[in-house]
Image 1 (cartoon, rainbow, N blue to C red):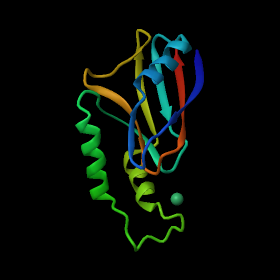
Image 2: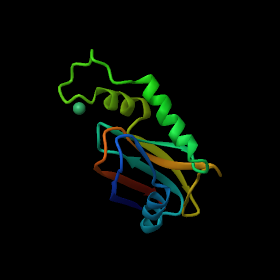
Image 3: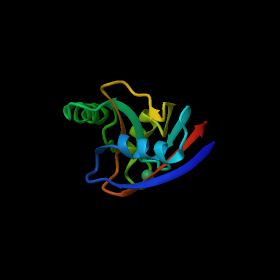
Image 4: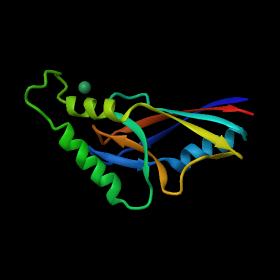
Length: 134
Ligand code: ZN
């Protein structure tokens, strides 16, 4: 059994982390897959996806702050659109996740959430979810 779905999210600021765990779980539940794999894919070049703590809002804030330190805006950048810092953060964080589905649920640790990470917002963004299994 396999199912492909997508959903849109609206980001609210230039750097914005949005917890999409519930939307991804909904895609898994709608697929009827009980045992298998879930792939989350972000079709953008200035936004990414990662897993991190879902409890303390200071964690995504601090990681976003650290990414700004790693990839600040630099006058040496050549890309005419002026958002090379966002492209760099996107490559560091990555475009996809592979997750385990068991008992019809995403297998995540107690403190883990799935975060859509925006680096060039605010924008309307898309998330693709492929669920495979039985
Ligand atoms: Zn660009």
